[in-house]
Length: 317
Image (cartoon, rainbow, N blue to C red; front, side, top):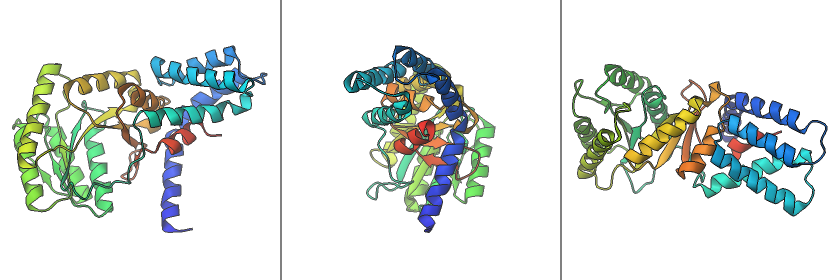
């Protein structure tokens, strides 16, 4: 077996293990729903609707999925219960495709956009700083040079945590004193990265859920300062959400998408929850691509989101 296949197999195992609680929850309920029945009928679809909602897929997205399955049942005239998981996989994978969740390159950045600047947003406690550290590690593993900017200047713990990750990964962290202007930190980080021909810059931001206007002004100021140093940056605004919070993650997504133009999502802590369906619902409701998923504490446990592999692990046999 080649080295690439070994790595791919390991990632698949990590994905399967990370989604195991959600999968077990869905399949135990689905098995009970189809017990003693040979074909998919209205009762089974009602049960499936409840299963998806309680897995935090969300009501609106669940109704879309049920509608699609009903169309399949009506078109095919007869759908056996043994076919239900296959149809479920196919329809959800197609839904994710429609919602801009196309697969991306494995921790790569465009050659014509270096340094590639990522501004990371999200509330405290969702795994934002940890995600930044893991991203830096993955980019570095791919041969890219990375700079980190400690823009969450309102919490000493955030700066210290980013410092620890910088040392652990072996990448420079640009920081200032507590309470410093986050835009000033971003300015210094981009200047240092530019001078040293860095490939990737990742800027942390404050995770306070203060009112929308203040948050919007703060993030807009940081973005404006960045674009003065390197035009058309940030190239990406990455919102980090905690998948284990289920519907609360939807609320956070609403808050941050209203405050700034979020271009990608990272959904963390999926390994400790049966709420993995939140990935499907958030992708559908916000039409923002899920780019990364967190499946554990290890440095390698942040994975690029691949819709087919995700759906196969969640709804596979």
